[in-house]
Image 1 (cartoon, rainbow over the protein chains, first blue to last red):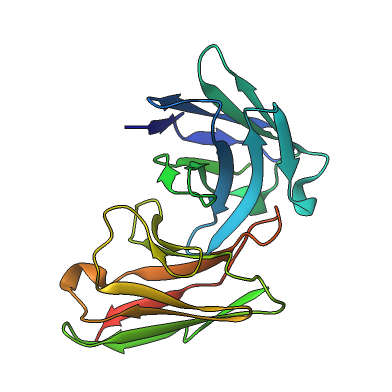
Image 2 (cartoon, rainbow over the protein chains, first blue to last red; image 1 turned 45 degrees about the vertical axis):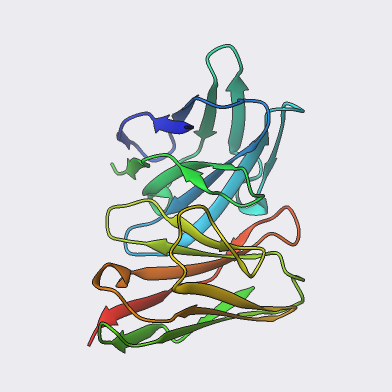
Length: 117
Length: 105
């Protein structure tokens, strides 16, 4: 059974960066895409980007181009999402999820990122 | 763009729930439905418009293709009161609908 375990909550200053990790246990690490989705307080779900372990490539939604990087360490089966130039609007719960059906179907527990001065 | 309606659905346990998701352009059958409860990650219910995900009860069903999709919960159980989201993957830029909250009447 695949489990995704994310790093703990973060409190960051505006303009700084945050790096959230997502460690996969069980199953094949390289077989499925890892997606990142965020949810601002009281709001809906927003897709952030994805990492394809088989190719080692990442794609990001236009809104985050230039300040988002999704990388992975295959040796530790961990995917990282680093978001820079943080602003208050980036305050959200960030989820990683694995897509075994083509859709995010195995989710991490979420990481709360608070951006505040 | 995915538009869900209604925003809120007030129903009683045992009722039938019908949730709608409309796409601004065709997404073929590349549409999923999720359930989310407070403080929890979303849970995949339906993928590719009509296929139930592993472990999802038969009272959940999906229909539609192209631009108009429906999630039906045949008989609401107390644990079904939650927020439901649709999501498309017709291209690699996934998008979600704004959600429908199913609340107890």
